[in-house]
Image (cartoon, rainbow, N blue to C red; front, side, top):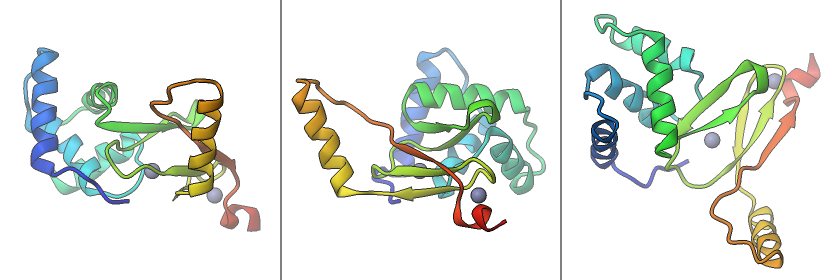
Length: 150
Ligand SMILES: [Zn+2]
Ligand SMILES: [Zn+2]
């Protein structure tokens, strides 16, 4: 899914966010944002940690920093997450074009989709209840085709 904001702008938002939380800007914190911005997909904190370790072996980074930074970014809606229940969360960049997800409970695989009818229907429901919709999360859970075949 396409991203509608440049990295420079996103980084600026992130620096402001750190400042307003009285946190220092560090290269480590930026790398967490950068990995999510530049990689299409959905990542656990461990995935992000491993990607940074692989790409930047010299950078000192603790997994706790990854967790904390992701929470901060999620609160500011710069990243969003999909919950896997007890298995935790997978994160993606939050300012991508709107889409929904199919989540495989067996392998953790995620497919993205966009369906005009579902979108319209949700707006109609909100309208019916005189509800001002600001967001929705639509997640279909189950087994992907590969896992069904096993
Ligand atoms: Zn699967
Ligand atoms: Zn997604």
